[in-house]
Image (tube, rainbow, N blue to C red; front, top):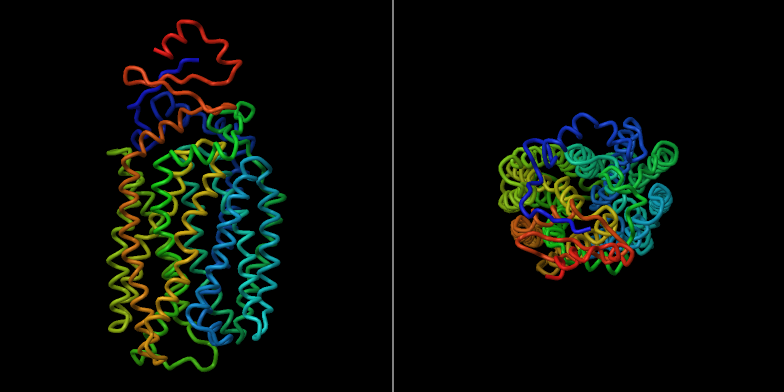
Length: 517
């Protein structure tokens, strides 16, 4: 019962995350056995990841469809920038506040059923939002808010299923595939939204594409995906894992510095991404009108070409960014176990100057603007898969859905829940007249805030690097019990003593004397 813990054992070794030669042999030679421990075959596990990736792509495609037709929506309802920003804010707020509920349910009940119900609800509400009449902007706000229910039921749970299907290097690779869907789905949202709106001569049709695809996703979830056993893939069988109370989970997570600091760093990513996602096509359209490259919007098809180009950039930079981030992290792991937070910090710090240049050059050169946006978004996308991987290996399996939910709440509450609305309000407050000059200039000045926030986020990831080794080691060696363990340091090492009565009774007098020395 007295288990000494090493404070210096490295987590990564060469290109594998196995902890030693025996672990590497077990991973390399018995991969099929490891995967079958989850209760899911290798083929079905791969199909599960692909289906989850498809649903993730649909989620982000739906989220950014509105951004792709935002100038059309402004023209249709006759609203200002502040009200336009509310469309993203109400969605993120419902998504954010419901995430803890689904995180709690996801750690305790069948995750496949929870996701299926949520996605069905999301599809139906999205379809309903496409029938909003001109006189009822509030109805569009309400339905967009309800869409967050479906995303909350999915985003908090899906990464934990991948974590229960794969370990170590394979898990990182599968998470990379999963998070490719974020930028690709976002880019497709701009493209599909703008092109469907143009073809149908009505922006409402842009919101009718994803609901049908969402119902297909539900069928795939119900009939193909199989619920894996929690934690079994990590040699911690489910019948040995005991849930602690939700309050205990929150207290433990609040003391996990790697989790807390990386969450604040990811909040900066969410702030910048949310601002650009909603406002970038509109900003590019206003820059083109101000510079005389385009005529003002009159027929209701305001920014289809800008949304198309920005969507293509988002798809390409997302793929390049996620892939380069994972590869950079993998290569850096051979030199330092702090590779993941360092790569995240580098991505944010490198994106800041390019985003600044893109905003400043918008009125002078359209080509330069798109080049700087390309580079800024690529570096920003380096974080997606790595941040998810950090959470999964510094948090115990029985708390991962709760941790996902908590990270969603914080990152969205302080990030993209308010950033689109904040940018719109600042833009309205800076606008001195309704001329094309001030429509462009006010939005330009308000978007400069994104570069500052990116730098702050990079600082949080640098701070994460200070704690990542000890938190990862603690999560790797932690075996949950009904109560939290008592850890007593001795001679530079840790002795773990269970506080479970039946186990404590079996301690020998010599063990007790060591523990309380």
